[in-house]
Image (cartoon, rainbow, N blue to C red):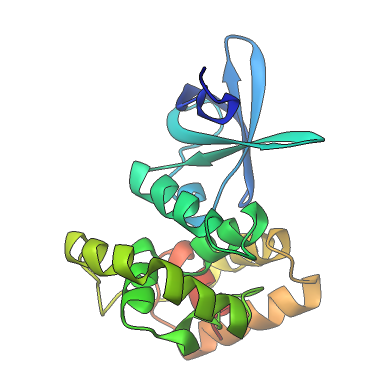
Length: 204
């Protein structure tokens, strides 16, 4: 018998609503609410555009939560993270939002605990468990991704409002979000995309 959490593999439809943490897809007149990472958010088009997301239905006794991913690779790492003791869906999505996929695999493969704990909500003990449990997988995956050492490009102040909104959605207070983004802009005045700016702010 098929597990209920494997019944929905992907969703394709029109974007009815989106934010840095969730999207609503109009599928045949039904609004499907999916939680997403920052990485997926930055790939989405505008309201009314068609989109395709890989999915995972997380089942608990009292709730069903649908998660959406821009790529199968992102969904795969999400599921690996869920296999680690102490990592739930909320933290797993926070980890995916805190660094690029290639960077996360690199941190885990290289036992870079210091880089992992910079991600909001990820403590030292959980980071150590992630490294211990996922390092064999990470070492195999690092060869599949090119890590752009010059990923930090340039921060355009025009991105500030969207970056502050994203951090607020990820759990920062309005004041914390504004300070973190402002600091990121000062430190990286040449950044030219909002995703990089948000990641800099998350790790500052």
